[in-house]
Image 1 (tube, rainbow, N blue to C red):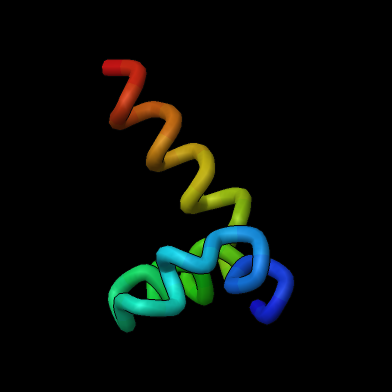
Image 2 (tube, rainbow, N blue to C red):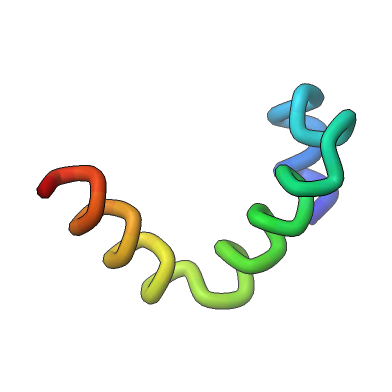
Length: 41
């Protein structure tokens, strides 16, 4: 998760961003499909 924090320093300031990054990393396929489907529609 450190690489995500370094690439996006803005997320480090907010705990919610870090939690979201962790959830996305844990289930990248599920989150990607959910976000892509939800945003597209």
